Image (tube, rainbow, N blue to C red; front, top):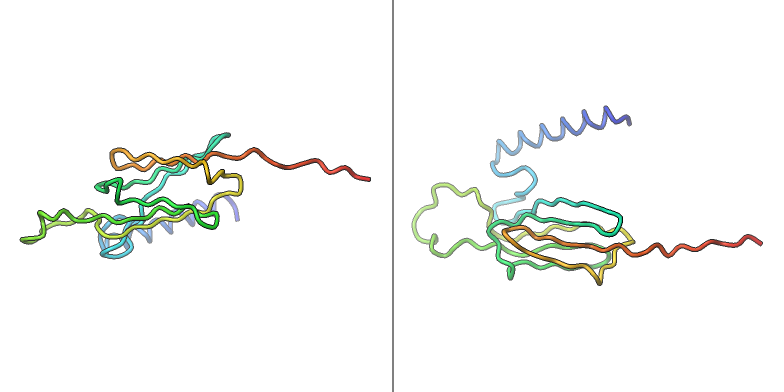
Length: 141
């Protein structure tokens, strides 16, 4: 498939996704139902590590879990609605509340034991260091 065809297909996929958003409300790639959502991610790579940034606005650090299982990075937790709004009627609710989870497969060269995490201003920043290639030259006899 050509690059042009890939771009055209992506455009139509995004267009259809945007139509679905208009029908049900919310953000196309972040809401899955009324009580769950999927955090939006950016993943960057340089020669030494991968950087994963997850958008978690309104979530406290103690509401977030980060795990690595079976070579998969799993970000999960729960965002709770402020109790002061339990009485009365909510007229507009665009923020997400409920459980969330996001999983991404890790490449084999990630040092899972050395992953670090920092959470500030609604942004979870993970650094995933790369391991040095352990290949070896094979001598032909």
